[in-house]
Length: 359
Image (tube, rainbow, N blue to C red; front, top):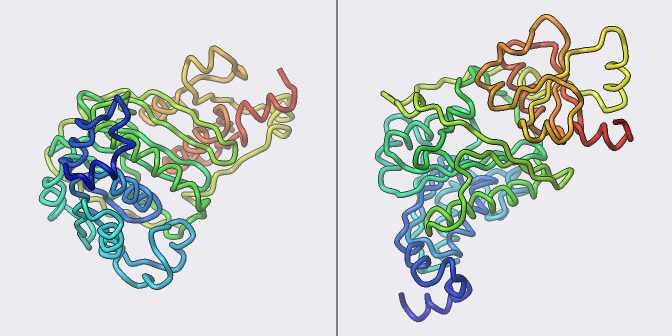
């Protein structure tokens, strides 16, 4: 490493867990970043600052004015320009020791294997299910570890897939949904920054072989409650058998049908549970959380529910809850996409009920 690099990365090198060896591993690494949007911007900036050797940024989209609220790499003068190309120009100036390569196109079946095959590690910051399944399956075929992140309104998710014998994205969401919303929902501007930083931390740990990576674990962050939750993912070996890449053609449905989540607050929930026509209550947390405290609901952890939605009856009202409302919201969305119309989310989850002083 040059003297300039040693000076620049001094605070990394001073960490015993990283040291000069770890910094050299970063310098030798080749990382592909899918998407230069809300998640991709902080990931790209922090990986560039950390000194990865080559960073490939893949995005065929152009900067829009509505992106500027959260995609902090871009400025008003970049509106209308390709995101990958703008990002590469800015990041190459940020750290001349890093080679930032722009791939100004969207990934598809014809180009993904060649594009991702040139890199050691893939980070998925895309914003649609079709791309996530495509990237996942390509990483399985190429045997590349995949750092995953997603955001929705006030909640972020992070995990690591295809790492050793760990799960893949299809272990979290086994069946691709046929529906995607035509419209866009809101998102708290700072949320992708928080989530993207967590994704970058996982990438650095993978590259330098330090710490415990989030393989087999889904980490969620709720910005409204400033709370973190984790739950375990089980690897299904069948999801490692990929014969060909998916040809997903999402079918648009009205945004309300996909993104709207019917909810009730804790007070209304307690009133309903005390009535003769009380709904079925399902708890989608993990078993250890349930043992610590519960509302006497039926325990179906979120990962299990994704694999076995048939365990939820379709002929009666169902209220779903977790600790703070994030995982249960995902469960309700998942079930609604699979035809369940009479499911509701308990807003605020168990925490909201306990704040009312109810045992």
